[in-house]
Length: 73
Image 1: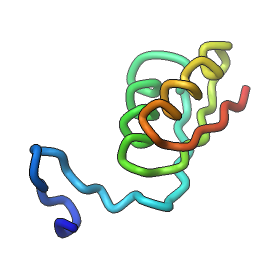
Image 2: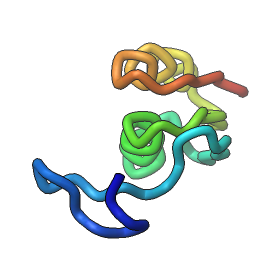
Image 3: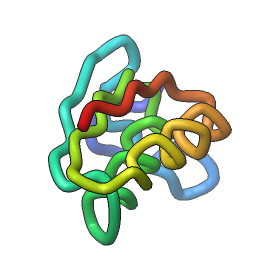
Image 4: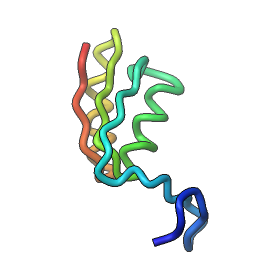
């Protein structure tokens, strides 16, 4: 495993989030939704918080990136 913050093969950065839980606010659209997907792909369990029903649709996208997600409205 690459040291924290360094690029491994393939140019991705290991953020050291495997096994962590992250809360993302405004996860129903824009930067919040993108951050949730990226954090899930980095191995974090993501709690998505937002006013829009789209929060639940992003749960599936985070799961597809092999992360765990739960939407909260």
